[in-house]
Image (tube, rainbow, N blue to C red; front, side, top):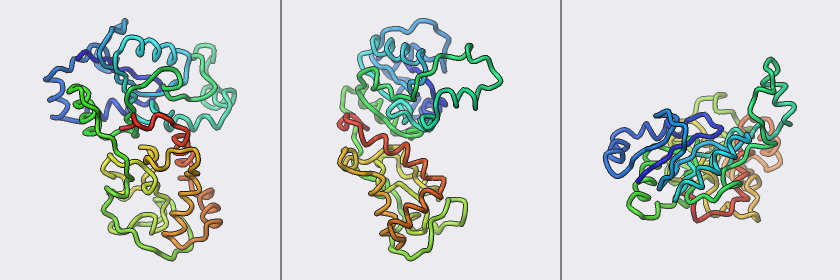
Length: 287
């Protein structure tokens, strides 16, 4: 299987995660998996026709759009890898500012005419082309990427994960009575108790599983990079309201107080990204 690996506007973390698969990656590369184009690995000017294209990053510039359209036209199967490709990702926080303010803030010392022409927003690649499989995550875990690619190589449908991160986390969920919410760096967490029960803003109760819950297991809150689990993907579900209810139930803090605490807490920005998944329609193609 001939493969293109393409990066749009991103941090290259998803391809780095793929490379971190170690022996599992070597197993794939030793089989019928030939990388014929990837700026990360080789210097080629022309994008060839292939069986599979793996794309990380979202569309923020006109060049990004031109590139993703060419990649789609030259590939039989296209996989969106990582939250930037699937839904715009953390880069979408730039959507809170106008293009004028972004250029003034980030590029005030440069000649802006030399920069790529920016779009008004950061877009996922499905806004411009058809996508066959979506592998969200920031970045997706190495073995999740490998298992997906192995299934595609064997002409099988990859396993879909439909439950929530809490099912993969060993922490015990208990009702608690606390006075306020905490940032993850404000106090030390108990390694055995649910982070939400301790007053931390963790999105594991809404987020799609499949990652193995590495963040909450290590004492860091889940920020929803895998997107909502299947039950939370419909327009009729208010994801933010659900988060408020979960936190209120586990902490004993009233819902109105939870809302005020969330706006005080810097991790509220995670729900801004998370809510973009609510309008997503290709539910059956999310891995």
